[in-house]
Length: 95
Image 1 (cartoon, rainbow, N blue to C red):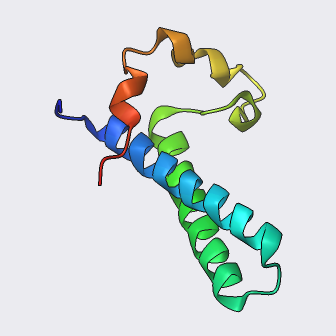
Image 2 (cartoon, rainbow, N blue to C red):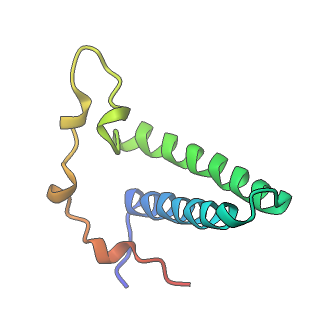
Image 3 (spheres, rainbow, N blue to C red):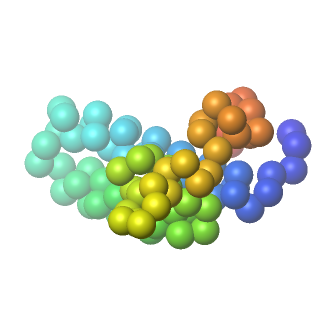
C-alpha cells in the first residue's frame, strides 16, 4: 500500500467517520430507542463534523455547499473530484 500524504490520511479518517454514521443510521432505523446506538451515532457525528471542519479549513470545500466566500466562488479553487490525483482505490480502509 502506498504511503499517504496528510490530505489523504484526513480524507480516509473522514470517510471512516461517515461509514460509522451510515452504519449507525441503519441500526437506528430498526432500533430507534436504543440508548447505546443513539450515543454511538452522536459520538461519530461529532467526530465527523470535527474532521470535516479540519479538512475544509486545510484543503478547501469538499462540497459546493461549503463554499462560503461572497467575493469568490471557492469551489473552483481546488481540483474537482475527477481532477484529483488520488485514486479511489487508495481510500479503501483495511483493518
